[in-house]
Length: 359
Image 1 (cartoon, rainbow, N blue to C red):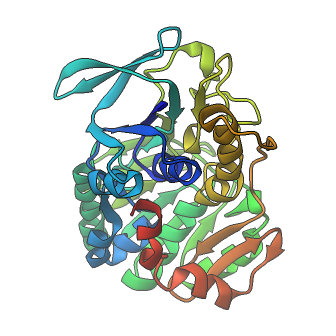
Image 2: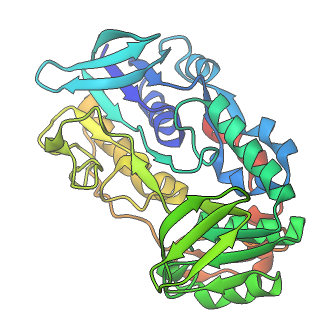
């Protein structure tokens, strides 16, 4: 029975395990993650204005692995500190003490960490819970708010805060428009401005200083401004310090071939935000990566013949709520009407579907 070690207890790691046990019952999986619970962080922008939702976004990894594996897998609360590919060994830190875990196959799904705690599980779900609740409390007290970054998280947060809390929000997209990579800038700008959000394009911050009453931000156009609160959605770094440079690009993301096999390895795979070639979205994971991983695992881990699939990042589908009233989106490249974005995501940020990933 092959032993597969999966590093990472968020979307990619959990879906990898579901995929493996969907292919065969004759697999032993060890899930290694520093947090005891997974976090449905897609709902973080809604939690900012509706903290009561938070408890519905955490799921026990112990319960998950036991249910999915039918008792054949196990969860270890630990962080990976080193990988020896020649020996097929992962060194992990358990309660401060190093331990070595042998594997036949390794799945790297450690993802990335966020600069502002609460938008991802950086170390533990308790830390994430504390972080997002602190943001929610600070927002209630703040009158002027800057959001840095015009991607989905920045746009969603700006819309939620402006709509529910009626706060003055300035969104610095750092690009030609909000959601520019998806060509949704015109519609997003109109919806944001209708909510009272000031959208500033083509300006990026160079420095953020904490002051006695808030934050002082310096921008690359020479301007400076004070805010009660600054939410930075631009800083995400890969969880890959434990990996050798030979399998990473300069930014620290893991390099794979188009079958998601890690560069220079035969029995090591990567999934999720850690991928150098991924789009770093749930849509990309589910629609793009998982079918490829299933085909690759079927051949390499399960030992069954099957057609190989090649991965290409999925960027043609995206849903971005801009308040509870709707938002912007695309489905396979086609622009979605506002009511569909509302129905599919903005009405409850898909919290009712959170358990699908982690149970």
